[in-house]
Length: 271
Figure 1 (tube, rainbow, N blue to C red):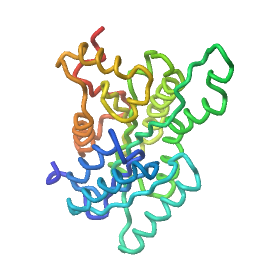
Figure 2 (cartoon, helix red, strand yellow):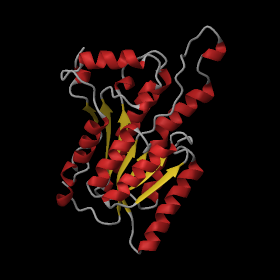
Figure 3 (cartoon, rainbow, N blue to C red):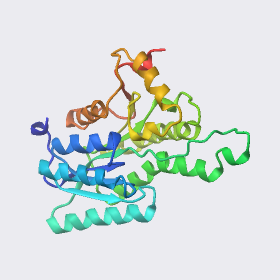
Figure 4 (cartoon, rainbow, N blue to C red):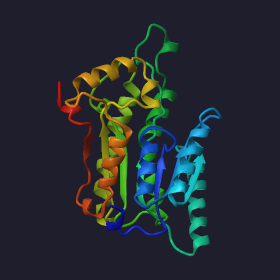
């Protein structure tokens, strides 16, 4: 597909949540398709080597890579990253275009709303943080990218949602609320960015064995149920989602916007 796109040497993908799971797979897929990669991730020392491995793989493909180990929901860090992209553009003497923005941030509070003790239940700060990181930050990144002319006609924005946006799971309440808000933000951005030729879609992956999913209490049961339920009798993989994202990033996908697109092998439609 890379031979049929109009991507050039100063075209980039910006991946929020690039060091594992869907973000990792998408970064490698888009690099293979011809884009340079700017990745934002938040890793401790123990998981930092994985981010370094991904960056090394991208370089081996022949693409440029900028990785930032920061909180993607921090406004000051966001400004620093965009400043670094601007500096890269000045050094090359050519403007940078962000052809793909992927919002794949999985950092939220997994606590019940109602618990035996007040300390065990989710509080306001935890609820606000979950929605800010996993939903609202998509809006703020998009605002700044548009304002600074990094996004333009033909750019694609993707957010990663899940069945949890419409269904419930123990301790998943705040994340479910964030996914619902993320889908709403996606629709609103699609409306407002259509005149600029920018599409915005949300990808609903099937249950996928990722580090983020493993943090959810009861994830083993969730994996077993999904495999039993899926018409193909297997789980969704991060590469399944990266493949779909690559297809939807193609110029011929310009009329697909404002949708929640299931990438799950039919899992969601089966009771």
